[in-house]
Length: 467
Image 1 (cartoon, rainbow, N blue to C red):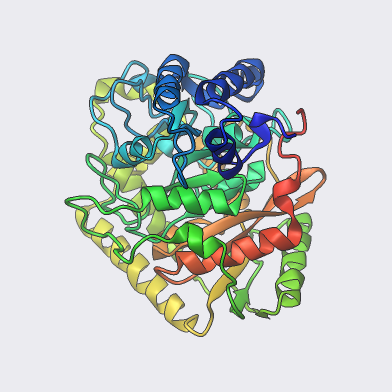
Image 2: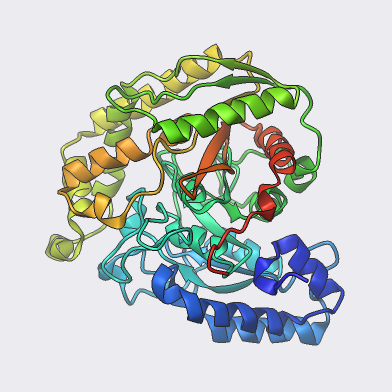
């Protein structure tokens, strides 16, 4: 019989319902695993084991473990960018080392209402600005596949925690690829929902339309079920996509015959896809064709002019952060770089950039209207050493991030759903493929991802090589 840390959330819930294990036993088992292995990985910024044990004891006393068809008593973890009442929330910054909010983000409230038990807050780069996870509080997070290679960012701690068997699933957030990048680096399923699918409230704001919370999981069914938990409308939401939930149901449904546009070259000049990644993408094309889908290889339809306009929006958000000038020396050089860059832009330039992103991506998607799904690599390169990102100045570090992840941010600009799936491996490291679609078609992607999962049997692969 599989050990508790090897089970996905569905199987763990079934064990709880059958009274084969108690919620407290599950928490104790996973807490011990974190204490044993997280010194190397650095997935957790803050551990909340005692609160988790208390919550698990309440589940056991009430006899609600598993929650019928739900997930009462199943552990999870919360990204440290996400506000948690009474629990330290550092945003990955030494400036916020002792910050304790008094308000839960809506996604945290929804997770708690579903009966999930959080084991703590997961590591993230300072203010979530980077596609790699490293900060001055905890340091760099490794992918469990190889210590010393970065887990990706900004949800790197969440991804490492799931891949290492610390929790079966976790909450991430994604403003330029921050769920999908670490999903690829850690061999997981990562979902960036359609813009407005998940509420950023009560205090958060998605003024730019770039960011969304979403799930990281080992199986498509887990990712879909967690999205069902998160995709609930909240008072005051201005962007909510109110077409119901049913993502778990979609994950178990045949997607039918789909028309798929596939491209492998980045939209930015002078950036190339690693041949090892390209080979996995080519295998993905063949697999989709074998499953009966119509796959057409096309040129990347997004223009390179999007990137500088995206940077105007991205850096302006950093410049607007309420950080006093006297606190700036505490920030990391990369954070100061983005803040200074954003301070150069006028309100008119920001408005023009946002209009350009919206108008240009709309035009691209109109040109792709005949296709149901888009297929690319998630990343252009394999997981990289920590120092590859940090041994250089911020300008070069940003350039290297573009070399690493030139595909993901386009879907944030367009506001469309995307799923990274752990389709293959190269040199013993995971390689993700990214499935994208038009606005609101999250269910189509989950159905196709589930079909690929069944065909490739990736849920049975050893995610943590050390176990």
